[in-house]
Image 1: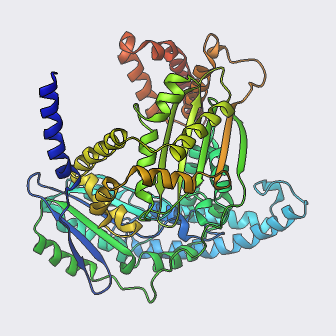
Image 2 (image 1 turned 90 degrees about the vertical axis):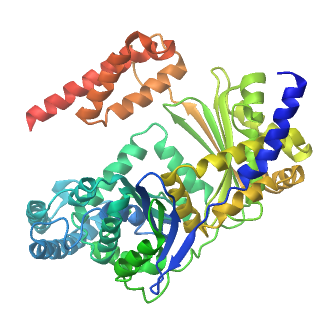
Image 3 (image 1 turned 60 degrees about the vertical axis):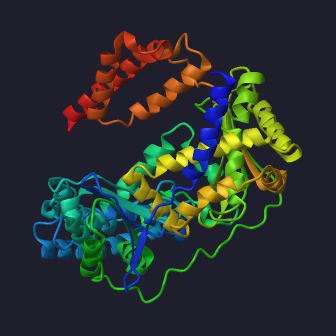
Length: 581
């Protein structure tokens, strides 16, 4: 490209750039008398509507004893209502009532076991030999009630009604600050969405409550306990937050999952799933007046709670000293560093966000320095995460073979020191802003993604921040980056985790012969995931490997026979277990 053409292209982009980051989403807001809020973004074209709603409650709103209850509700909200989910709802409710009575008596028996465990009289709460005869009788009755409840259920009826109506992508997610439910529906099925969602809020039936606790417990085991670094990262999270409820896991502590009662769940639901704590959003092909009419008809049936949920009371205390954790796991050597910073919407959040972008990416400072120049890391990144009540700046890097995580840690600090001492060049800063501008343009193109982002923005404070944040990012200066770097990147503000590769116990698995340490770690991680897979998923992976054949890249081709053997062994094991049932 010659200079004149390059100059013309630069001029065109400079004129176009303000339009990119100035893109505004036009949202009409409706607030019903009961406090329920609806965000409306009509878009003609594809005859579908991205529809969702958010409950402004997450794990940070919990308390010790019921951690994980917000995530449990994410599961329970798909169990149906008085009209959906059971062949005989009255009998279903009677069985559930008796289950609660038996469970209450079981809790008394379990408290006795906990007392004996505390005194050292027993060593295992789950050992049947430690149970009293009455305990065993109650368990037997509870098992019979569980079977009876299962016979009354109409499984997955909620999902089936939506699917038959053309709905797709129905799911939900929970984090520290909110629980979000979403789906895509055809425009001519919008009333179905209003009825279905208002009905599960008005008349929920928390079927299979105790069984679903076990499902969540299993989910925790798969995601945390059975992964190479899951428990360590959970411990690091808990260590980082001294006083804030962000310190406990979204999925909950194991003992709390064992003990949450339906009564506690109903109290939690009544407060946090009332209309004055809910916000819905529609993005797509619909008429505003029609949507407002449906909102009044269906969501005004919900009764406002007598009091509004309180904000999170416990704030993070000022940090007095650096915290460090050293772990040995079946993973590549790596380092994770976190600094306490600010919440979403704070005046310093945009500058910290830009700082993270300056350090990250293929052209970011960390890749240039640690990966390409010093060659001490395979990859490195940084980011600012501002949540509703607090936030942190994170850095992470995976050490190259032959390099210690401590060496990588020092290299990360060196890059932070440069930000403190040397203002960022205008050209480098503008490149980062250009990336944000382009991303801002792309994030409003997809209706489903836009709906999700508006609800998350509303849950964290206000949907208006979706429009305001791009302008705040573009206003960040080199002086802002230097100021926040000096303010927040202090030793007493950080927690550090160093991960070393765990030495193999006993003879090495023959499958790993000839692999590098990094490849061995990768295989071990895949092995732990395969060990939890159902037969259908295993067969799918096997078919995919066989279909790729010699077309896969060389590094993957080297490990393909190993992974294939693990998958085949998993299938054989599942076959034997199935034959024994």
